[in-house]
Length: 94
Image (tube, rainbow, N blue to C red):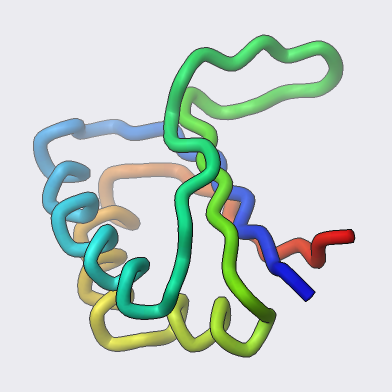
């Protein structure tokens, strides 16, 4: 079953966050992740959101978790977490 990472991000420092993006992309590719949504305009119909929304597709939950906990992605996160507020979750597809 496909798994989707749903990520919402408010970035406080674009220059520092760019260092995350440089490392996160190759880590994502290594684990077979595919960007379905990467930024773009958001129109909130109900509730709230953050400035950036990202949806990533993975083949299964195990692979998604391996990606998230991988040394490559953890290195990327070391640049992102200090300069952003993020909501990051994995959701099973239908």
